[in-house]
Image 1: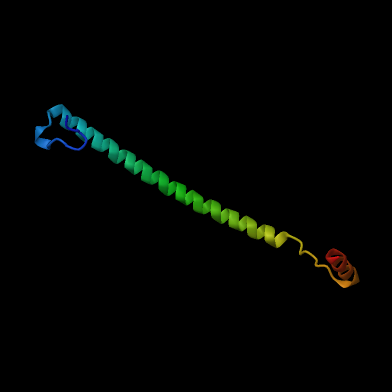
Image 2: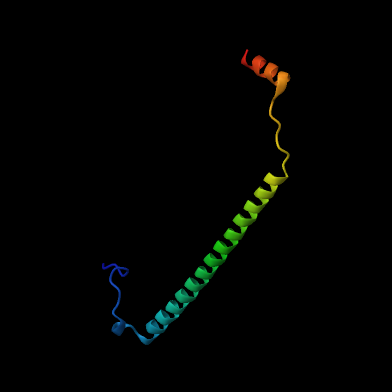
Length: 85
């Protein structure tokens, strides 16, 4: 039995109803492809906005944090010496 997916019918052999169904399916596929492209553009735009917002929030968090104080002086030397022992 021949596989229909591999052997497409010639357009001349299609009936009137088959041609109408084919046009309908082509229109459907065009509409779906257009909607998918629009959805992907919107998703990419929103992703870029989210990444920019996250970067701005991280920069603001970085600028508002108190600078950490390092260990210095005699107490720092004692802590470092006791940690090594």
